[in-house]
Structures are given as structure tokens and as C-alpha cells.
Length: 399
Length: 228
Ligand SMILES: Nc1ncnc2c1ncn2[C@@H]1O[C@H](COP(=O)(O)OP(=O)(O)OP(=O)(O)O)[C@@H](O)[C@H]1O
Ligand SMILES: [Mg+2]
Image (cartoon, rainbow over all chains, first blue to last red; front, side, top):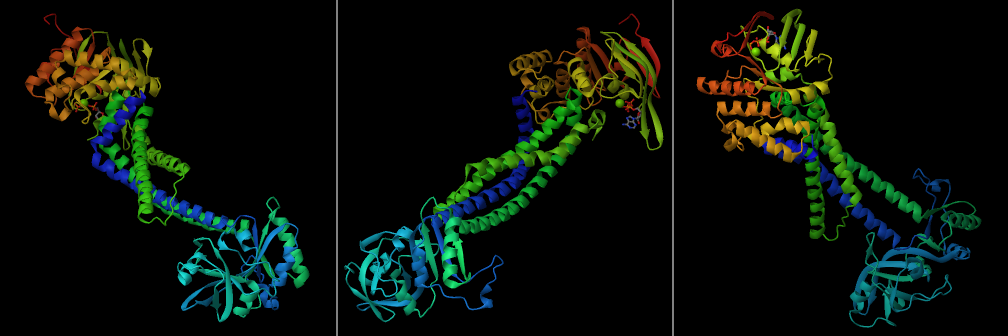
């Protein structure tokens, strides 16, 4: 039998039962659409989060106080955790491959300028922050490299905070109050937007030592170390560990590499993908059962036709192929409709909610369609084999 | 051309064996016109199905053109049915979703014939059966007589050597039944071997060779008088 005739014949029986072909196709379409929609959103979020993470660069290692084991527990109970101090950060600066070391303290405080007040984010950081986090300064300059333990009372504003406090006036050289202390504004950061939920624009940056005082804390939140490209993360981790162990006497700190963070992120997203796959798998299973059902009905209804085909010279294999073909065409059509539906809905969602990133990798599209075809084959095998196995005489005599 | 030697066809029904064909010996030459008559359940259809390679004998040998076809594989039997044998059934067995032309085309499609060649053959066959203006009608838009003519067209489009008709007039009125028999006889006059199973003595007597069956056996096998 020629391929074109095969398709025409297959098509003719599906078209003869338009309504139920459509409904059966719908079962697969819904499954594929669900998977495509969810994976498109999932991939979009994946890429979005990845971009958020890596915009600070990939050569950053962060050190936080306290030791978290892999079990998530803390060994802090064996004794007090020694605070991570500005001196620790200074010591890390002496590591040969450390390009920038930034102590970080974060908190909330009231900021006042003239008669305007605003409760806002306060970051206590080091002079090397713009370099480490790839942030730009729009006017003035960043905090100078003062004596880190006794820095001058300078402040740098985030772009939005500047707007809120000064409007169109020039803030450089102005004095503001932060939690009751006076600071002089020496610079304004370029807008960075929201990163992983933190608004970096509605923020004021002050020296870390002053922030510790302000929030009455002993320990830094973390120390971020940006290292030279080409140096292995393991070497950096080993170097930091050695320096801090020498200072603290034991390992009462945790080092997190960018790689580890991406790994954690990746595994979370992988779990999500598996969950989405399972949901899609269930709806595809339901679709497949629909195809089995409809093909079984078709074989029963067309028993006479099967007998006739055999009488006029169809081989068992040809009968098998025809019914298998119908199942595959049903599933493939469903897959195609599902792709259009799923990707279309994802794009529509993106149009309506531009903040929601969507992305459909081509590979997924092909895999989804291939899965649909395989489902058709699997669902069609049983009914088609039954059709091919019918005894021609009995098939012709069937009512 | 068709040669049956000690053919048996048994059916197991529960713990009982039904001898549908019981030691059949039969030789039919090319171009013969044979009618098969007999009471219901005497084995007429079973015999026809066996000759048409739709069924296999339980025992015995079947030679078609000197070749033993009892042992052919499924694929070879299908090819033989496609090329050498044409079936006409009482209930037409047209595929309802295909047009008359589509139904006639089916055996050629199964044989893998290219479309252009097929179209010409189908048109020619429909023309010979006066069905040209019905070519694009679906079976449910045709009368019983027309449907059986489409079925005959389908049986003959491959130019088979044998046409096997199992009660071809059983579902037709007297007039269309007569037309169908006339058509089958004209095929026979062109050299096709024709076997017709019928309950109608009038039709059975038109054949040049009349076989009567009873209980799976051939009861009588007579050659017509010279008057026909
Ligand atoms: N598949 C089968 N299983 C069991 N018995 C069968 C089967 N097919 C036919 N038979 C039996 O074989 C015998 C012959 O049947 P067959 O159909 O050949 O009769 P027939 O002469 O064509 O009858 P009719 O004139 O009613 O069509 C019958 O007794 C029938 O019951
Ligand atoms: Mg019969």
C-alpha cells in the first residue's frame, strides 16, 4: 500500500466519525497543552531566576556566621558562635585571588532628609561593593576605603530613595539622618530594580561598621568574596576556610559558593519539572485510555469491514497498520493541537502578565509531539492487534 | 484449475465436532459456470470460503492452477485473494464512508498500484457496469441492485480468474437479482470462472454445472443439458 493511500484511508475513517475523533483528540490535546503551558512557565522562571542570580557574577563566594550541616541542623549548640567581624573581612582581603571583599549588614531604619521621612532598607557594606556586585554609580562616588573599623559617616542613596527624599534636587553633599545619626550623602546608585524580591533602589548604603552600631549587632550578616576569574571555587573556599579557622579556632561559619546556590536552585526546579511531568503524565494517560476505548469500539463496529479487507487481499499486517495508523493520527493531531493550545496560552499569559516570564524550548516541542505519537502507538497496539487477528470468515459473518 | 482432494473442514462447537465439509472431492476447470445449492447448513458457504482462501481445510489438499495452496502463508494467501479471486457477498459489504469508486479502488490500493493507473482501471470497470454516474455516491445513496453492482465491480477490478458469489441475490428483489445474475454471467462469458451459491432453483439451473450439497457432502454434480 502506498503511503498516501494509507493516510487517505486512515483519514477517511477518522473524518467519518468527526465528533468522536475530535473528542478523543481533545483528551491528548489537554494533556500536552497542560505540560507545555507548565513547562513554558517553569522554564521561563528558571531562566529568570538564573539571570537574577548570575547578574552579580558567578565568581562570588559568601561566608555567613554559624555552621549549618548538610542535615540543616546547626552546631551552634556546642558553644556560642563567634561573630563574623569587620576584621574577618579585612583578613580575607589579604587572600591573593580575592578581588573584592564586602562585609554585609542589613536592616530597616527611618531615614529623614529635611522634612521628609521614610522607613527603608539600610545596607551596611564595604567600599568594594560596586565592583563585587557589578553595580553602577549614577552620580558622586561610592563609600571611600576608610579605616573599616572607624569609617566616616557617609551614605550612598539608591535611585528610588533619592527620588523619594529629594525629588529633582541634587542630594550630593546633603545631610540625612539614619536612625538618629547624621550622614553626608556622597553618591547615588544607578537603578538596579528588584533582585530576588529585594528592592535595591529603595535603599541606603552606609559603612558596615556604622550599620553594626546602628542595629546594635556584633556580627555581620555575611561576607561576600569576589575572586579572580579562572581560579577554582574549591581553592577559594579552602583559602577562606584556612584564614577564618586561624582566626576563630574552629569552623563556626558557612561558605556558600555560587555553584552551590545554582545547584540548589536547579534541584528545586527539577522537582517542579518532575511534578509538572507527573501531572501531564496523568492527563496523557487519561487521553491514551480514550484512544484505546475509541479504537476498541472502532474495531468492533468495523468487524465486517475488516473481514472484507481481508477478503479482497489485505494482509494481517496491513489491517494492523491501518488501525495503528488511526490511533497514531488521533494522538499526533491531539499533540499538535495541544502544542498550539499550550504555547498559545503561555504567550497569552505573558502578554497579560508581562512580569511572568515564559519560555518554550524547541526541544520540548519536539519531545512533546514524539511523546504523543508514542502514546498513539501504545494505545493503538491492542485494538489493532485484535483487528489483525480476526478470522476473516467470522469477521464477515459478524452482525 | 480448482482441484479439491478429500477436503474436510471440522468445527469444534463445545465438545461436539461439526463436519461442515466431509470428504469433498471436486475439480473445476477454468471458465466453468458452477452453481451450488443445498439446504441451510449444508456447507455451501464453507466450501466457497475455502476455495476463496478465506478459510483453511482441516484435512485434504487444495490445488489452485496446479499449485498446492493449502500450505501458503498468510501473506501469500492474501496476495492470491487480491489478484486471482473476487468475492461477491449477499450483504454487499461495501465500506460505508467510501464512494462507489472508492470501494472499487480498494483492492488496487491494497495491492499498491499507483493512483493514475488505478483511476483508469476503476473508471473502466464502473463504465462496464453502468455505474459511471454513480461513481461518487456513497453506498447509502445507492439502491440494493446498484450496491451489488459496485461489489461486483470491486470483485472484478483486479481481473481475477475466479469470482465467488455467496447468495448474491439474497438481499435483492427479483428484477435487480436478475440483473446481477446477468452481469455475473457476462463475466463468465468473458472467461472468468464463476461459482454462485444460491437458494433460488431458477438461478441455480442457469449454471452449466450444478452441485447439490447436503450435510457437508456433494450430493449431486450434474452438467447441464446441451439446451443452454
Ligand atoms: N465458525 C463456525 N463455527 C462452528 N460451526 C460452524 C462455523 N461456520 C459454519 N459452521 C457450521 O458448518 C455448517 C455449514 O455452514 P455453512 O455456513 O457453510 O452453511 P451454508 O450451506 O452456507 O448455509 P446457509 O445456506 O444457511 O448459508 C453448519 O452446520 C454451521 O453451523
Ligand atoms: Mg451460507
